[in-house]
Length: 124
Image (cartoon, rainbow, N blue to C red; front, side, top):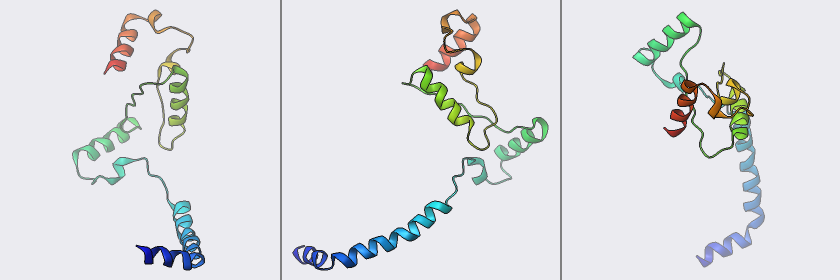
């Protein structure tokens, strides 16, 4: 271990130069990497999930949907997160409490069916 430490101390400029040179391909890779949010693009086209997805797109103009449950955030933070999610490519609509009402409206004064749905969704 002592020899290794001495080697590093003796050749510190060379090691620094190699580190800087290795940053170049990593920067190129970082810039050229595209984030794919569509998990369905990895599935084979002939499975039932993809067949159903194609039917939904053909018949209704929209594919599948996802639920995002958020816990431990304020309603304002949830609304901000919903806005960020709506800006993702491929997301056509985001529905959250803030979109249905105003954040100033207490959940308790909502119609009982809507309130029960929200409470049930929060607790599960």
